[in-house]
Length: 376
Ligand SMILES: *Cc1c(COP(=O)(O)O)cnc(C)c1O
Image 1 (tube, helix red, strand yellow):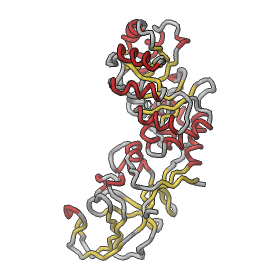
Image 2 (tube, rainbow, N blue to C red; image 1 turned 180 degrees about the vertical axis):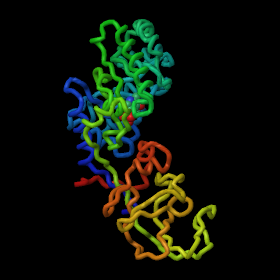
Image 3 (tube, protein in one colour; image 1 turned 135 degrees about the vertical axis):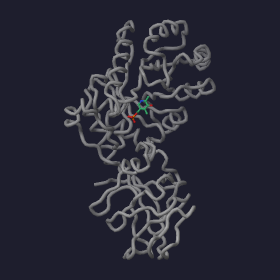
Image 4 (cartoon, rainbow, N blue to C red; image 1 turned 90 degrees about the vertical axis):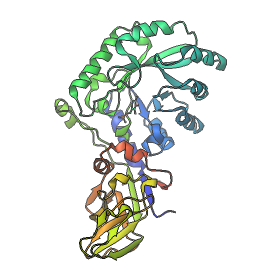
């Protein structure tokens, strides 16, 4: 067992899944987004819990992720969220995935591949309502729908869009996207035949008017709370609390006194102004501890906060322990989680690294052993 390890808190994940299921009305389907190995938490684990908590479907980004879930025995609908290139079409049929399409999709080849597999391609039309990532422009969707009709092996399962600013960035932008999507929905003949879905985590929290038939939460399952808007303040007060579901632990493997004027680490970016105790911890950017936390990151040792001294190395970091210290080799280091009365969350790390918490947990590499346990 490695000195550095992750704890994934199953009870916290379950609490979050349950809180989301309880937040949305019964008739609204919940699709658990488990792409990127469930944001680093473990796709098979989270998918299994989602099923137990009454979720109707799963969503992943790429066909390899769908295959992992099928191999693990999941029979529920699996949505792919990213567009496929033609050489991935077969994988989509082999994994019985629901395929996103837009005008960049080779519909003729998709239709032929479906026929070859003796299947119908179940597709979701990606609708671009203002994110400008993938999808048919919302106004062009009815014509696109008309044009697909000639492909007899393609069945439209529904329509999905994705919001760019639902997490506090721009209320106006959300309203604009919502309006474009809603106008499109009104122009679809026999809408009761289709599934419409628009809401990611922040939309699920703050914009219930955008639920349609299914919501697609990701980050809130993992305990990351997207920011609300001043306009959604009233709603924010009624929302459930989500639990952080990850702890990242290590130990001090070495301590030594560095003389005034000496430097620590690559590039000699940290200089000791006085004689200084420095501790070394075996985690680095090869584990996913961001290199941009050089001279910025913080860790907990003995319930107190200490700073990363110098550059984050591939496999190790050094910590500034002060002029005097009672810290010893072997002491526990908390990189994410609680120690004493203090806590460092994934969101705290993300803020220091100027990124989103999703990126932090996604990039924690398989070199770190995972321990699945309960928090309470
Ligand atoms: C990743 C993703 C989601 C989930 O987003 P969160 O912000 O993590 O809830 C939903 N829909 C699509 C299309 C996505 O790509």
